[in-house]
Length: 278
Image 1: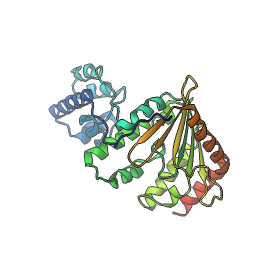
Image 2: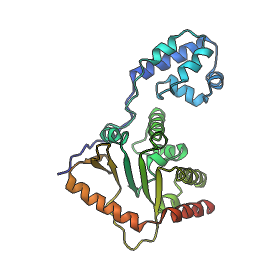
Image 3: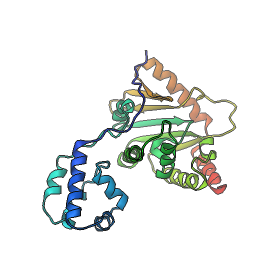
Image 4: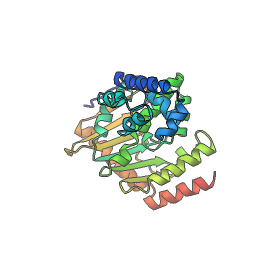
């Protein structure tokens, strides 16, 4: 038996506490006579990030309220409002069950043949995917989805004791989604991530006579209690796999793919070669 959560996607849920906090920031900023750009310069943020905070789309970093108070008159309003912030799910409903497991996993394996996984995407690459999504997304939906993805990417650096492994098809980079510049930036970003001690990236070569992953993408994770789960995603939703027999099949396939893909060193060399071709 396979237990699953299947849905139609949709934009991330909003957070009342974030919207309220953002409204307070905007009101105090406007009262101080500062534009978003001017305020951003004083607190070390871009105008775009300030806008995201004020619209309730971004979780402020822990020191934002302290920095902003000094710029906005030391009223104490931001510091008090920040105490009531709750982090929004920031993910489509059908993905949240997996995301909760992912956030505390000690091992996370990913095989992807459709697109570069969200944890490895650049903003330009992600926005290209969102812009080309059908049915079309609104600007607000695109912004919300990128902010949720950016937040999720912190897993790679904020969980240094979690082992991340990725097997990516070579054609994901040869397709040049978004154009040459977007692809070059993406490759450079992935190369930088390969320098993290807890991250391994392997490339499955374009010419491959035997391939254990032809049934599609998969993700496998291990919890702190050493329990394993898998997640498989399709066109309109995802399926969480909890049955040990089903998981065993996926685990065998992933293990075989690790032996079929290029070594870590050869994968880096290929990525550098692909970058040079752009």
